[in-house]
Length: 283
Length: 283
Image (cartoon, rainbow over all chains, first blue to last red; front, side):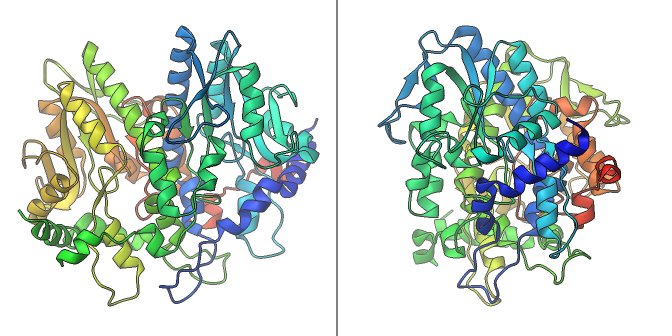
């Protein structure tokens, strides 16, 4: 495949991606009842994620932590995968057992392993701007995945891009320097099971065959669909910090920053900043 | 100090804070020559940092990594601090030696240890909105700092808030559950030396007395002022990822996400998304 074909394949895959297409409306900041005018798509989110040294460092730091954790886990073979078992809750988690299954780490793809810099650039420009097909690795991702392979740990990709763009997804991963994954073995897409964009079914399938020592993603639903069933912004945030799930972050579950689109960009001002009634009463 | 006094002290400290005041203009996204209208302050950045489960998880993950790294380092006493020595460069780093100095971790404060949720809420509302004085801990920060203390590692705070608000800074840290730091011993502010907002001098002072096993901040200048001397957005990002400095992230230097204000929110679209000349020529 020539460089040109890679670029065209990527563009087709990205622009057809249902995951990114679905998330596009979330990329625009929500209009707040307390603000005079609706905000346009956030340049600040693009600056942070695609332009800043801070986000680059944060991503590299996340992959350093993931690599260190996964390699250490592999050395003593954990009893359980970091994939929640069927029927588990966030408050009372239970995990799929590892048995003697081979070791793996499960990765989301978009804004977890690759940065869709070109697509985001195109979207931020005025209509009719030339299409930019640049795909970049998330800082640290390629080095970490290579280190995992050297330690006998297989990288498995679980994406909400749809099965009709499988070739483009594979080309995107190869273009940043990764081995080509194999669909149904080390690559799972939206449409590979009946649950469509709900990744829990594919996670169960993967954990049935592999001992999953770590997972990485930029959305809470990359770890469990249970987060998406939580109705309010404040409760969803609280669910990440309370109870046994809180200790998963950085110890099995690894989050990459996505300030360009997705479930982290939600809420009116009074949902982002809940009023502290105690403080209010004392004023 | 009553809860009311803490709140008033915090408000005074926060609103007088030169660090936050200086950074306020950076909170507004830069107008891009390729966009029709200037963007208002980004609700998306506030949603991500103060509202999302993703950012909460990312912060907790960072503190889990910092705690694990610092405690492991303390167990074998490293030869060097993670503070760059005078005259070092990012390309050829050299470090302040540890000798037999006591162990410490150096923390920035704002959006590293505490979230200025109230101040950011007030700023996002229309003029004349009631002042909100809520200060929250960055998820994971208090637990990690307590664990460091139990491991014999002292938390030292190096902030660009100015010396005239020292009492408010101390009250803010105490209000989230931390021990009160002592100015000149475990707390250093803008004005404590002649370099003002340049933290390098205070870092040198701290590393002269302590073996600094880790540093945490939300701005690259929380690690070295050298990053602020880099002229372009793209070069600054590249500097975090190239050469020996790249391996510091997650292994001595720990970044917290700040999508509300600061040096990560810079650049026009063509700076955030540099054109890939190779791809362009092949089109």
